[in-house]
Image (cartoon, rainbow, N blue to C red):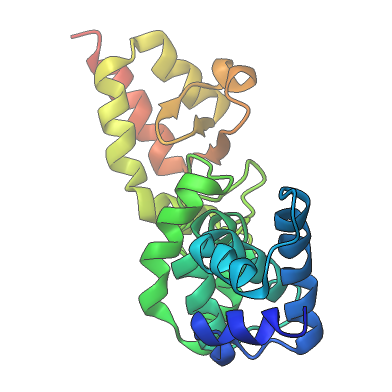
Length: 224
């Protein structure tokens, strides 16, 4: 093992990651054990190194997971995880976002947003602060951790415009229901209060006086 680790690190140029000898051993030993157990004869050092290098994606994922055990990551470590372990990066978006925000690594955000959508736990509601689809029904963002203000969410989605668009496809009774209840359920689209139980990921957005008056007016226009 003492010969395998430095050879793998050298061939894959992994020195820059700054992992300790123990961390590298924790990652590489299980991979070596798996290779040895799958062989009928004991493989040579060169054979082991080649197998690990040829299957480097497995190693990269294991290294990414090990790096994520740290409280804080350096910029090059964040880049490595995002670039070489996309599924792990997607699931770890909340932790990686913190490091990216603190260190000004904004050029990684678009990629991380995509990976969150593909491998994370995306919701249907985009956070107006960090841009991830990660807002939960209690208006908390799973990625940046902020509690989203209703007024900020309304502004980001063009709430008044959405109300006007929804009024074109809703009948008068639904518009009156919303105006009477004083809120809608939003999951990327506007829904009346009566559908709240069917849309568990939706958030409740309360109407201002002006918004309620708008709906009442639009409902009356349905009569014409």
